[in-house]
Image (cartoon, rainbow over all chains, first blue to last red; front, side, top):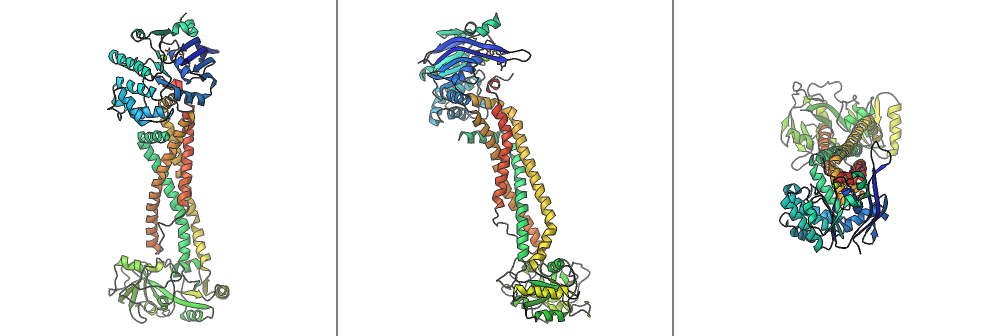
Length: 227
Length: 401
Ligand SMILES: Nc1ncnc2c1ncn2[C@@H]1O[C@H](COP(=O)(O)OP(=O)(O)O)[C@@H](O)[C@H]1O
Ligand SMILES: [Mg+2]
C-alpha cells in the first residue's frame, strides 16, 4: 500500500486587499510508495510548506483527497486529523521546533504521548541512536544546532510513523552538520520502514535522492505564479 | 499524565507570577476562612461564657452593659444594688443560686472582683464543671485580705501563692491611685477558658471596705449573678424587676442580651467579608491576567504540541489545569494563613476578654471556601484557555522573523 496518495489537491488563502482567495497549492497527483524516499524541490514561496501542512492535516484541504495508507486524511474532522497525525506522521522542521522548556528526553516523550503512548526505554534508545545518549536531560538551549536537529529527528520517528515529512531540515545547519543530519534522517527512516518526503531547495541535498519531484512543475499554482 | 508534565513545567517556567498569584489567592482564602470562623466561633463561644448562669441583676441601665460587666468583666458597672436586694433575690424560691460581685479596683489593669466563696464552691463557669484551685493553693477566706487569682492574670502578672500586692483604685490602671491595703495570694485558679481567668478574686467585704471607698455605699454590690431553679420562672422575675419600679435591670435570658452585641458588630463582619470577596476577585483576575499575558510567548509551543498530534482540547485543558493548580497551591497557603490569622485573633481575644477560641476546630468553610476559590481559579483559566484553543497551528510553526 502507498504511504501517501494525493489527488487534485487544492488550497488557497484569502489575502488582504484582494477579492477571493489566492491559490497556493493545486496538485493533480502525487504518490509515495511505502518506505519510499523522495525529495521535493521548489523555489521559495512555491507552496512546499503549505503542502506538507496539508499532508499532515495541520491545514484542511479545500478540495481533493489525501490518503495516508488506507485512511483518507481529507475525510476527517480536525480531531480525527490530529489523531491520525500523532499516530502515522513524523514531522521535522527547518527550525527544529523543540519545546524549549523540556529536556531532550521529555521532548521525545511528549511526541510519543499524543500517539502510541510514552515509552521511556524506546525514547532513550532513540536518543542513543542519534548520538545523544549522554544528553538526555539537557535542555534544547544547552545543545548545538546540529544536536537539536537530531533530537527533532528522534522525536519525529518516536511514534513509528509510516511517513516522515521534513521541511528543509538542513536549512539552518552548516554544511557538515547538514550532511550528517540528512544521512541520519534517511537511515533512520529506512530502519523504521517509514516513507520520507523531504523538502529542500539545496542542490547538494537533492542530489542524493533517486526521486526528486519539482513542485515548481507539479504545482499548477506555483507555475502560475512563476509565469 | 502528559498534562501534569506540561502544567508542572509551565508553572516552574513562570515561577514568579505563579507564586504571586498563588499568594493573592492564599490571602483571599485565608481571609475568607478567618472571617467566617471567627464570626461563628466568637458568637458561639461568647454565648457559652454565661456558664450555668441564667440571669444578671443590676442597677437600672443597659442589659448588655450589665452582662458585659458581670460576666465578661468588661465595661463599667451601670450602678449599685443594695445588699438587701441581693439577699432578697438569693432567698427567692425560684432562685437556685445567687452570687454577688463588686467591682471598682484593679491590679495593673487586671480587674479585682469582690465576691463570696459560694462562687467557687457552687457556681459552674462551664456547665458541669466548677472552679478548681491549682495545687498548693486555696480559696480566700471571707474577712481576710486574701486573693484568688485567675490563671491568665496570674501568668501575666507573675503572681503566685504567697505573693502580696496592693490594689489600685478604678477599673483602669492608674499608678497614682494605689490603695494602702495589702493582699496576699492564697491560690491560683486552673484555667477555665472563660473571662474569669483574667480576674483577681477577693472577698466581697474586702472590696467594699477598701481604704478610701465611700462608706455610705460600702455594703452595696455591683451585680448579682443568678441561677434559676427552672428557666420558666425567669419571666416572672423579669416582670418583677424590669416592669415594676425603676431601680433594677434584670438581664434575662442572657443569650438574647448577648445576641444584641453580635448584631451590633454584624456590620464589621460584613465589611471584612466584603474585603475578602474583593481580594478573591482581584486574585482570580490576576490568575487570568498572568496566564493570558504569557499566552503570546507560548503560541509557538502550543503550535508545536498540536503539530505533534495534541488535540485542541488537550491544549485547552492544560491551561485550565494550570490555573487550577495555581489556585490549589494558593489554597495550601490559605490554610497556613488561616492558622496564623486565627492564632493571632485568638490571642488578642483571650488577652482582651479571657475567652478562648479553638484555632484547630473544624468548620465546613475550611473546605467550601478553598473549593470555591479553586473553582474561581479554574474559571479564570478558561479565558486564556480559549485563546490557546483558537491558536492557529500553521502560522505559529513558522520561524519567527
Ligand atoms: N496563512 C497564509 N495566508 C496567506 N498566504 C499564505 C499563508 N501561508 C502561506 N501563504 C502564501 O502561500 C505561498 C506558499 O507559502 P509556503 O508554502 O510557505 O512556501 P514555501 O514553503 O515553498 O516557501 C506564499 O506565497 C505565502 O505567502
Ligand atoms: Mg517553507
